[in-house]
Image (cartoon, helix red, strand yellow):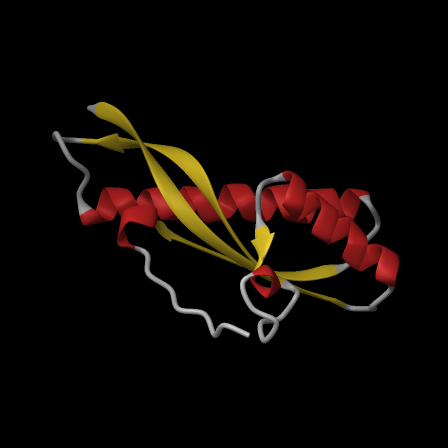
Length: 116
């Protein structure tokens, strides 16, 4: 079995159960430090609580290239890693957050964004 590293595109969006400015600054700062950028930087029309980023994930492959199942397992590993990182950081800061994280192999990811 071989180990290969693949880049995964991550989308993160969140909602805070109470909207104190300092809480939003905390999560924004944390995500920026991790290399995630808000979609609102791409367009004024996009929400400021939705971020894009990427992570490198090592996956086990049975052959020279990954199967769909192996790439999917890597995406699950990427979402769990990012979700846990954000969730734990916010809990440690006393911030109650509702969080959504999705990952896909970067080489197979496409997106469109309204320019504003």
